Image 1 (cartoon, rainbow, N blue to C red):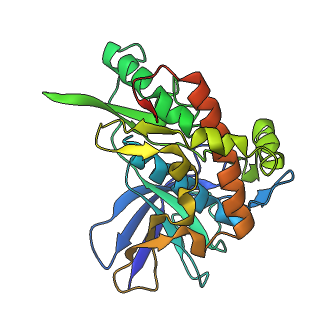
Image 2: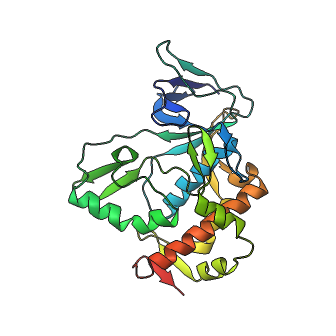
Image 3: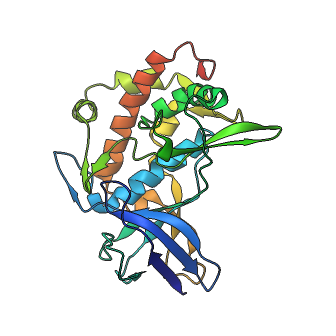
Length: 277
């Protein structure tokens, strides 16, 4: 399999990354934003090398809840053999020695005012779904979303940069917020969080499915996410998250998401999207 990756820009944020052209088996290339982390700070079990999986989990859960996100992949580098080409005028900070990278398809961002009434309405209606996943840095930050109005179709917001709902990164360093640290430390003692959560489900944003919140909080154990594996003849595949994360990481994800969703349930008890048995 031939995988061609060319770095076109340096990073747009504080984390290592850049806009890349990725071509597979001589097919026309597509543009992706590719990024990774290099270190961690604070006390937590999350391995910075696994940051692409953490972000992919968040994107996959967002899709489950009916939110629109671009195509995304965990770009695997199991043999540390990926080659990132670039012109001499680019100063890349994507490091070829990482075991994987997060790649999200770059889509158009039509010019739109933040006070567009349809945009404001959709952002508000989808707030409960974002808050269940603790997705922040959306409202008022135009570079993190695209808004599309297409004739008779309902207007849609595409979330381009969700980050990780349970762990965060800045300047290439992985860390967790104070309230997530508290949730992690109290997870085993506060089993009533899970009991409370087990009584609730949420209707997906597209009204297609009902998602039990307990199942969503624990979904990373059985979840598969899109991946690009350069070892395969056809590299586009799906991989099981639990094959790459440690038991400690999976348990920490469950603890943090359980606490986050419990808090959101209390905040949005009157929401028409929330169902209590």
